[in-house]
Amino acid sequence: MVPKQTNDNGNKGTGERFSSSKGFILAAIGSAVGLGNMWKFPYITGENGGAAFFLLFIACLIAVGLPVLLAELAIGRAGRGSAASSFVKAGGGKVWGRLGLISVIAPFLIMTFYILVAGWTLHYAIMSFSGRITTDVDFNAQFSSFTGSYLPLVWAFVAMILVAFVVIRGISGGIEKFNKVLIPGMLALLVILMIRSVTLPGAMEGVSFFLSPDFSKLTPEAGLVALGHAFFSLSLGMGTMITYGAFVDRNQSLGSATLAVGAGDLIYAFIAGLIIFPTTFAFGIDPSSGPGLVFVALPAAFSAMPLGWLFGGLFFTLLAIAALTSLVSLLQVPVTYVMEKWNWSRNIAVCSISLLVFLVSIPSALSMGLIDIEIGKYNFFDFIDFFASNWLLPLGGLIVTLFAGYFWKNAAQEAGLTAKWFRIWLFMLRYVAPILMVFVFLHSTGILKFE
Ligand code: PFF
Image (cartoon, rainbow, N blue to C red; front, top):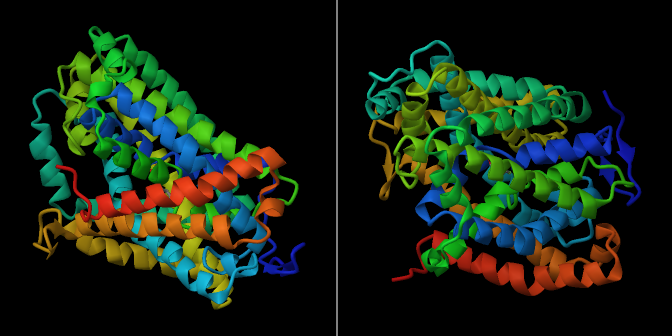
């Protein structure tokens, strides 16, 4: 076992650390780049008019996402604890520790449906490689009969085992090594698929949909969707970046890590857009066809192109990797919490939480067609997604901005910025981010409506 060690703040830490700056940054990019980039980003961009929405997303990422990302990493590194206790250990009162609990529960809930979608991607990768995505298939019916069966649970179980297998090996031996291989691997897959996609006949219409902005399409609503997505995409408000921050070396510049993670997230989303829009336009598919875009519309496109089984297989493998590297960061959050709180060993923590995630994912999986499990107007799957992404995530983000902006005496020292950048950072945390977060919260929970 790794001996407990005291860090430079005098706080107890687990003693585990990322072994290199590169390893840490790749792990954080792995967390950020996920189904959000490859599945959600393309369809919300499609629904909100394309290029103008993409620019809005970039603005939100820079103005609000990056300051909050830096705050999360700094709180984690100063506290060297869990997503809850780090607030207290970094110098906040006990109440912050309680508020921080939101950021331990949220990733657990997110995992329960994220793991299902990760399972879908594995299933589709195998289907495609084995030549079962062919032009004579009704992809809508195929998707609903798959999600309405028990099979997604089998795949979710496989995905959970893969994730647990990585996290059980620890920060540098598991999470860091896994990301060091897979993040460059993902980039290679993205580039191959992008080249395939932009060279399809008719692809340029898709490229221009994605890259030439029509500002008349922008609405206040689109602004809030873009901001909410910038948060989700950078893995904020979920305790993951606080948790990763707790394992970062003192000498790491958090400012440059923040920029690298933001740039990484953006680049991967950009290339994903350059895969999805040219393909959809080339095959006459409506890019605003919603969540089914990736699992219904794209298989139709792959089935109709030469070597489609190969490109489809690679595409779903890419999605699976993106999902798994995000899931390892999500799992690490409650694992860190129980290891610290109840002194559980890593093995016990990982196995029990993974099992619990799988068990809680069962009602979500069944609610997709096998059993009617409804909460309000949502089925169970959509309800957990809605509650975690629209309630807990903005609240978690708000807690971070308020703490770092108003209540954290050591903020300047821990963030390690120059005086000028520190003033800008503080301004964003105090006045811009919290106000916008409140709007996102009110809008995404349905309290604020635009007519
Ligand atoms: N950032 C991930 C994505 O874009 O898919 C999702 C995510 C991972 C959200 C980890 C939150 C989190 F803590």
